[in-house]
Image (cartoon, rainbow, N blue to C red):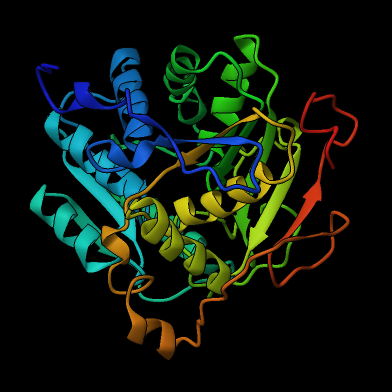
Length: 349
């Protein structure tokens, strides 16, 4: 398919049926968002920046500023830079060398904060970002955590799913800013679907009532802040995985499915595959895979890193159900909206 530029190529990612285990009545379909030019959040960068230009919020030649330690930074650097804007990315020491090299190669201005503030790395980055806004008063700050264009950018993803699947019974996705899972779920419901919505989070993330652990090793999901774009009312169930469980699932995803992904995708894979064992035959489960594994080659996929951080890979992963609000340290799940009717899935457990 011919595109006039790289921005036009964002979206229309493949939907891939994953291997079906003998003990799994359900079907798992992976939405391969990791096959966007950089990753899933290319959609957010495209939607937010184009809309800001359309409305005049982003003036011609004005800088674009965003806080990100991962894939959104790449999307913003690509879209903003291609459209002629100087891009400033505020990040922290957790940024990997591959992402850093990609940003540098695209000409982004990178600002790395040196230490956490009271509420972790995110708040430290936001403090630095506000300094930049004072320095560049005409700059456009994308604000991924609260910008409504973030969840709106996933309307196209929902449309793509509708083109590929007649029935979508369960939607599984990781949560960080809240845009992808909540935006996709909301758009599917507007199109007449009624999937059960399952959020995947990290142990030590505050998004769903857990205490903050800023030094958790997982990246790409979870948060130390409460983004307004996380719509708890649309989420029916949440799963938390700790670092060793997330890393194990990610390594297994590469080994079994040959999908070289990050830990957000690995955690989603673990949850979707487990659910596929609990449901009636022909239940369709859509799992959103956000990120590739290249920026994790020195962490998740590195034996010495895992050994140094005491991250062993368990062979068998099984979650436990806990009441919402229970503090967890291993793979656990809670139901948020137990009164909702979601057909086949609710009938099982």
